Length: 245
Image 1 (tube, rainbow, N blue to C red):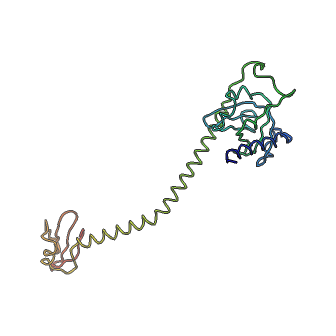
Image 2 (image 1 turned 30 degrees about the vertical axis):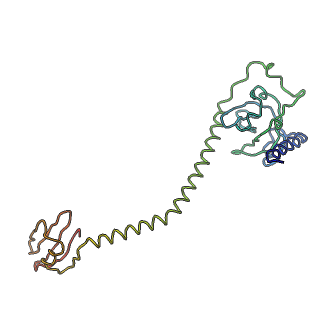
């Protein structure tokens, strides 16, 4: 049997098993989170979005809901609101929880059954007045679901970025160290071999004539080369210090 055939067979078996089980009132759906069950209740509102169609069994989508994903939507009637709104229905499947509220995802029409008999509500054509529009709270709830999914994806991306940063950090540190070493080596190659005590003639042979010479009040003098570079000689004419070389 193919995987598709096996999946369809399993869904039929689950629906059949739930149909034979005692239905659970929608008010007790939270007691069956993590279990297969048949939940019974009246569909009070529906809301459709590009992601899913949601059936609410409590006012303002505040309690148990049944969800049909967009991928499964073509399997169900096109007029879901007319078919199930204000009807007593039974949904069979795995009860899960989303943000503290019980819900069920149904994939096949066999998992969603209208209860027939005296407890069934009148058909849509016999209802007094038009069915009210979906509550704004339903749209808000769906928006929250979409935002939660986006937050989850952003969290995953942040985790991946953090992992990349951790893996790249040693490489970046090694690259920075290598660049610093190369820069220092380049400076050493360019810098003249200045040393304290050199005479003016020796310094001139190393780095050339200054752009300007300034005499100090105590007999010292300064050679200025521009760009913040300068040499200081003591009164005896020996190199005492330098800046910028």
